[in-house]
Image (cartoon, rainbow, N blue to C red; front, side):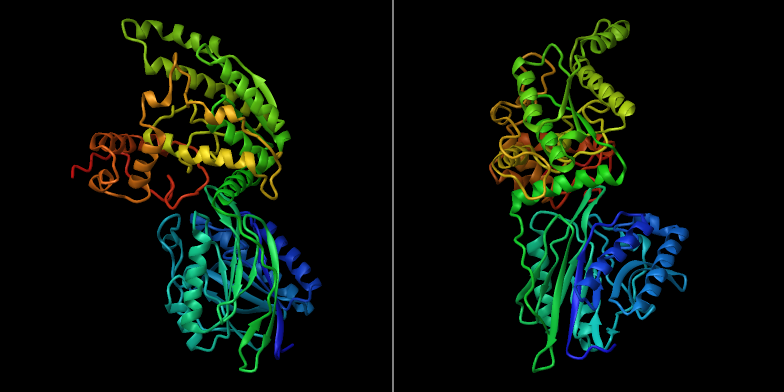
Length: 556
């Protein structure tokens, strides 16, 4: 049936599971059914929806690409029922090349294919490694409507969209797999407005939601008319579906009627929800029944416990206090208060016997040496062994709790507190951990499973941070004050600033050199660390790929 002057578009912001091709196809069927009930003519899905995004080297496996094609052909046949057409992304092999593609399915067949042109190869992206760049596309004919389908990065420069406009596209429908980091929603909006200014065409930005390893896709899909007006804004960090009713105006241009405009969370709420969604999907998509973590009475483990409960519910979170002789009564009380506030299962397992057993075992080898960090780390490693044993016995994943400040300078023990499968605060500096903890106590974000009110006891927030591995220890025995440390680290990691530039911010040259040195020599630890949610512009992992062996130091 040809469309004359109006049609309805369904914009599906869903959460695929990478590699679950049949499951993702069922999600397509489910949302197509919902869209049909709402009278939609066309349903737009996100980038590489059938495979899940980002598939990395999995798309180099021919059987995987073939599985995606089989599911697509099955979905195409189902559109013979006269219901909505589909725009679905998948990896597509053609002529000995592999493309990041979008297929238009209608009338029981594949009506058209378009390939991504601009393959990103920065930050978390490695698409040039696995995909071929497609030719500049023209529009596809959907029941008489000429739709341009630039794929994600194709809209971040002007060439592809201008080519679509010049070849007759009337509307731009953009499937995306755009990861979250702070400020990303504003950046996307400005880029898309630039494309509208250049082409004069309305634009629909459909973005994936959900966690995939260390990356969180935040959704926040939106639509803009050619006059730059916002006509649709979907939710952030959750699945959603929106409907746009399009009509031709007197100038024969397509205009969308205003649809649902959802408010977007501000920075701290967005960061919190990203941490929650990243942990939730990592646990659920990998089939863990729940999580276990050491609850020390300190801020890092407390915030991780709160994130875990918000993500999974209290019944799937097991917290364990692992005290030793240096663990203060205040820490024991604070940990218990935190567990009670969150409503989690809570156990206490003293570690004196394993620690002293290791000390006894090593006594002959260590004879004549002075006790120090090695002996302190036996405490951390004993705790790590116990948590891993509980994980092995009951199947729950260990949550590791080191913040970005600690991971930057190596203030963490391999095979001890670094044990675990996932770290929800890996990309949060210590000062940000404090701010987010205080924020969560005052707010109860929509959709979280944890309780409202003070979930992180205030005493944990206000007391001096300490690993409690020796008498009267504080973090500042070894590190600068965290506001100083975090500013220097932000300059070194996110900004790649020179030491001269950092010194102009008021930091001493000696401190800067020391922190730079610690940052570089801790690379081997970070390579062995659990993945964690990406929050900043440059997280440790795929964003920042420094060599382990590295003698460079900024001597300027």
